[in-house]
Length: 123
Length: 138
Image (cartoon, rainbow over all chains, first blue to last red; front, side):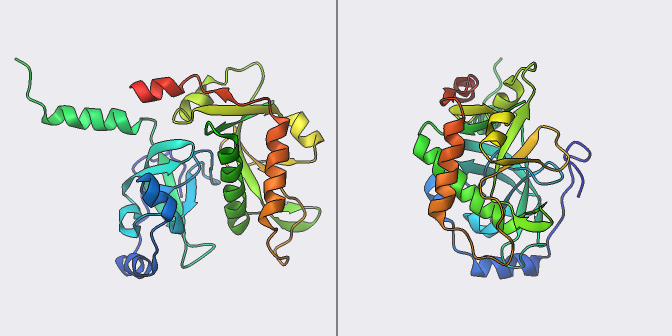
């Protein structure tokens, strides 16, 4: 895996059969559901490469947090936008580490920008 | 050097979050201590030198309403080990519970909570994150 500042488009794809196996066994995380976020993590947490990390059992929906997805990561310390970079199976085949690259923008700033793309152009 | 951890507005919620993350950390990470592989009941923090502005860290954590900070020396004197982690020069894990090897049973949640309370007590009182209001307004 590369550090985020080396290769911002880097994603480690996961086989679709693995995604489906884990999705079938998954129970939506209660906190993620209650908070309306894709996955729970701690914005302080960093792995050896400097990426944020959590585990798949903290996800609301497995298919929403596959590598390459843009997600809202939440915690009691607020919500952050992130890209899922990889699932790391080193510790567990059934509950992989979800590796996240936090975006230095707020969810609201992105939703505001996207809303402007549908607004009529001022003349 | 000082270390910072962003927190929710509520102290008990901050403690519960630290407990949960330390438990998760212990399922994933180990550290070499005293010739043993010990489970890392770790809480992540960001560090900075006292002559450097902490604004960059707090800006990065601007969805958090509050933060706490404490000198590394105070934390170590109280018996907590602090480990640098990976490639980020400003990221560290504070070990809440030391000496637990991989063959031992998980530590009870109450013990981890007591350690989290002790660690939080070492910090100055929770202060507002100066970047938090900017987060809600932008």
